[in-house]
Length: 397
Image 1 (tube, rainbow, N blue to C red):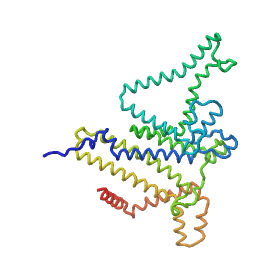
Image 2: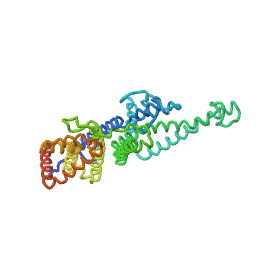
Image 3: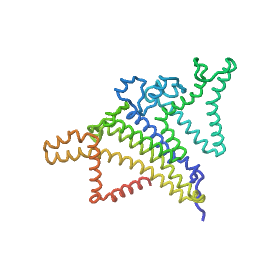
Image 4: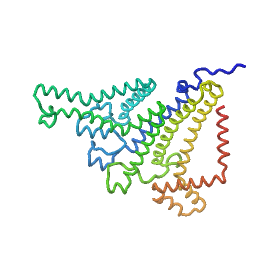
């Protein structure tokens, strides 16, 4: 009996799997989610308050999720190393991100290339980088001072009345470059880490980028809290304390809630699709070499990753829908009471400020969770989800 032969391009070796359309699709989804997340974060958390701008001017800096403002502040107080067309200074809109993003993709490509070339090349590159960094600190300083000693005689390289003889300033130039990188890193450090994590298959980098975004959101919320701003105002533009009226998608969600939900969904897409690739490839790498060519194992892997893609989109859609419903659950309850009772009480409660504030929506979402959790005693959720799973399996087959 002749066993089925799996073509080399369909085997479960890592080099072959990385070219599968499912793997590439998940990586592209994760990359696009990361870029869209960066843009949405800059729209929500990248502005300074009008009061701060009026007091500090256009070159003032506040700790917002935006890089050009810090670079302009640094440029107004001294020279910068990187040219403006690279940093995005003096650009507007998405143009401020183009060149830094191109640099992130180039660095990611070089990083992945180096990782696949062995430890000797990596060690050599590390040594060359260390030598060049040390030379940048010392060589310009020593050369300029030696030239000055030959032409002017002995003098100390600092504390001179003429700036051209304060050669110690050349040692400080690399530090200015590092400060520029700090301002760029406010926005692009998680982007670079995320890209490296996606394409070099690093869980640590993906989770670091995700944690960074969550920390930025948490710090912004803390620094814009009314109790904090009354004592120390750092100039950040706070989000509205009221979620607002649901006017989008047929009264399902409010504009502010949609923006926050978009950030959450993009973060989930980036994390889940990026980790899905690593998890599936780890599973394939642990298989014995003979199993990587076995048709049964190949079919099992194909079913696994195809199901993961289907579940990814299905779960994200369900999460988005249920979150929107949870945020408007108070409106649904009050409208339901109004239909039954027809009293003015429901209208007054619906228009109350407490329900529009953030904590009112948190209570509403908590009530929704309680209702859904209690509904499991009445609604056969397992039967419903099993029916959906069966239907999806038939569609795929």
